[in-house]
Length: 89
Image (cartoon, rainbow, N blue to C red):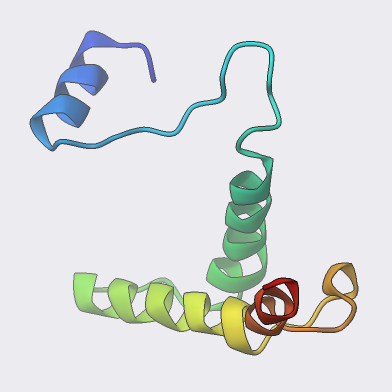
């Protein structure tokens, strides 16, 4: 799908810059892929399916807020993502 002419034309028409791993470096997108997996499995799947675009936008915004400011994980020593970034800075 990502190499089809129609898909590439759609991306070009909407001025979308895609993030793809460089050849030989499959882990370039690993952090984003992991986040997206968590977002889909732990957030979207635990909420009712939105019925409108507005509901979808609100659900996504609430999920982003949750994963940045509320969710604490062992991978970040019990910190939220925001706290962990602040510690690293």
